Amino acid sequence: MKSGDKPRTMTIRGVLSEISRVEKDVRRDANEAEIVQIIKRERARRAEALEFAKKANRADLIEQNETEANILAGYLPPELSPDEVSAAVTEIVAGGTNQMGAVMKALRERFGARLDGRLASDLVKQALAPK
Image (spheres, rainbow, N blue to C red):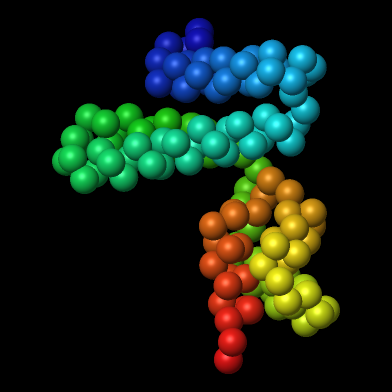
């Protein structure tokens, strides 16, 4: 706030208000995993808004949403590479698990917030597809 970085300040305020809303709903302080999920959800909202802004050819909104998504990404743990996720999927499927939900659950348990759900879902579908 003192640095005068308005986009960063507004983005962080938005996330803090979302965290406060969640804490009021569950009537306890949010833990780290919940906070990471909130930040991921907010970043996903910015990505979706960015897609709509690109379709509408709105340069101002494109810049704003890209900036906010990048700010939020700085507060998230580094995501796994596609190779790491693919290796884990191969390992889990080789272990005998052959249902989408079970594989996704195992991946979430193993990697937590670092897992990109969309990427993991695509890789699991490819691995489980009939050959």
